[in-house]
Image 1 (cartoon, rainbow, N blue to C red):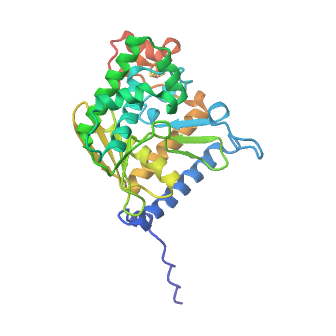
Image 2 (cartoon, rainbow, N blue to C red; image 1 turned 180 degrees about the vertical axis):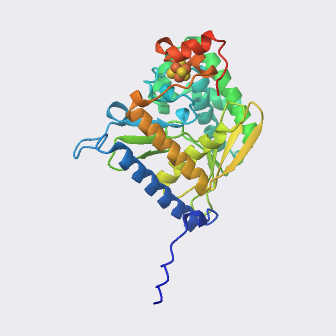
Image 3 (cartoon, rainbow, N blue to C red; image 1 turned 120 degrees about the vertical axis):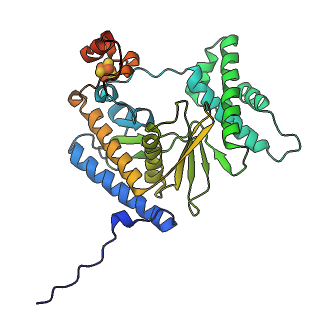
Length: 311
Ligand code: SF4
């Protein structure tokens, strides 16, 4: 008896991200992987009710890039301390608005100075995200001057790193790549500073980081690529992590392996957020700035023992 030959299947590991078709196939693959995993993980939890507009922040789970490299599961799952704006956070948002202003003025006879662009942005907060406007409004003159100076430094460093290239599209700070898991009160949210290229040629994303370049960048880049892939239905070609503090650019190619790593991490994060009581502790030097430290025996013991990392 002769057996029928197996129908040919697309080997997932053979998806080639260098072509547009390949990048779309990667998007389908990773979307399916993530949806299937969430279905298994959440069961009847966090379903969107028919006819009810989902409020992801109040009733659901929001998985963001900030927590993607968190090493302690309890810290990741615990209620986050209330977000407060700060000079460190605001300088990026005002800096981004300023580099967009510079890009708009490119090609005019007199190239604009970064400081002029920041001054223009600071003088007209009409189109700022509301939280940023309220926070800057609440500062006195010295505080606003400090934010302006920090934004100039941020924008100067970003441009020094990337160059004044008219093909680079700097991000609108109030618009972040997001993706809602279909039928679930679960949202994935990332942050991109600039994009080069388009769908047909392949997008290259830039994320700027204050941290010293290291292994965590791969996961952060993978998560950013994942959210973009899910939302745009095509994978970017690569994510470059730029560190203005060190002047380094680390290009990380977006591969099937990277997207799967990020998708699995996202599912792990969803599971911890959905069931925070299941989250164990991993104490380390990060306990010193954990918002749960006061109520955490492991963290206090760690700090009392000298605060060094255990992993
Ligand atoms: S104090 Fe340390 S061990 Fe405790 S939750 Fe925070 S990071 Fe984890």
